[in-house]
Image (cartoon, rainbow, N blue to C red; front, side, top):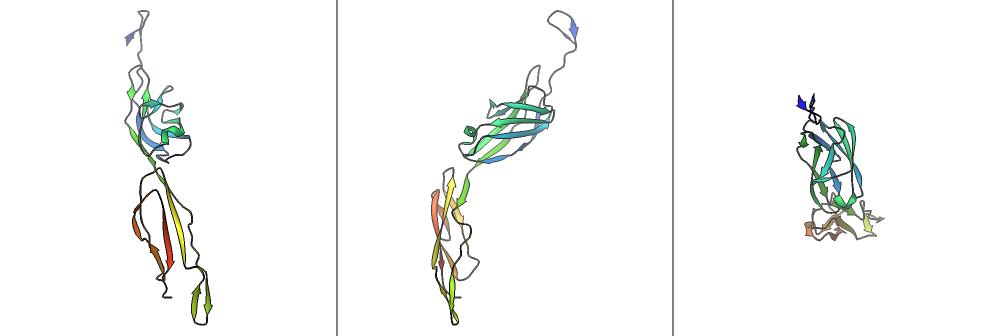
Length: 178
């Protein structure tokens, strides 16, 4: 029991402490657009608030076990990890445990398939294309570390591995020996 503002005794019902169990999605590509984050857990109440690195985000109460929050594109503009919590308002309550949200770089290739043309001349193959270049680009900055292999003995990848800038080219060359 508690005393109400007018002096009467009343039942005091405290909001429970929220508990987070999962985020969906739990990661996003750096530089992506705004999205809706679904937060699963327990003890959510109408008025619960999703917080992203401590800052409140527009939150929709779905149920005592689910909230949805709008995460603006500016929150995923740089690589790193965000801390997601839920705050339940007074009376009592407070801030939940934190879950990590990963903001990672994305990789793109300008080609995912290479085709080497060849014609037969009697018993031998004559390659019409002797080399091709694949360009890799990492959005989000930083270096690219790679290892590339050929599944054919007559192809060679140059360089086969290494670390390079966020934009680089790898050459696939006909190495002979069919």
